[in-house]
Length: 157
Image (cartoon, rainbow, N blue to C red; front, side, top):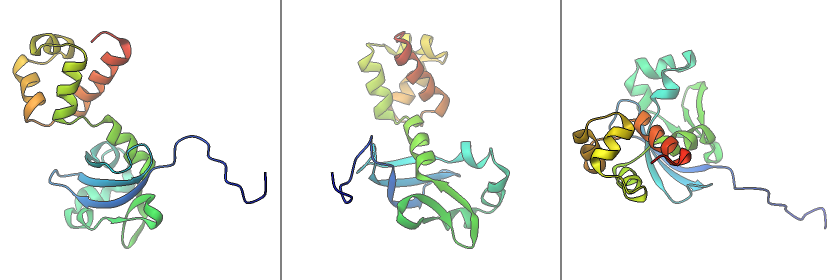
């Protein structure tokens, strides 16, 4: 092996290709350049990060500032111009994206696990009507998505 040989270990780190505000109050639309989600476009809610840490207070209080988000150098983060201490790394964003469940993801969860709307309602502790909404049109809450993931990992679904 020479000094210029590259060694690949594990999956490539996540990098973003594009970022823009989404319709939700703390929503962001991400396009992934590299990593496990490369080529995908995700819309995620940044509330779990923005509402947890004091440093992000300016983003909570100023919608125009939040909308001014830009792609960080090399696509490794989201940054806000004029605020060097405000940035969110692509690895944290990827983690949130993994926890986000779309209507198609939810419907696939039901099918993969052979769950009827009634059975899913019992497993998730929600009404049958909400299960139907999640499978078709309503945004799937983060906690419901995490519960689905837990049920699959536990093999109880």
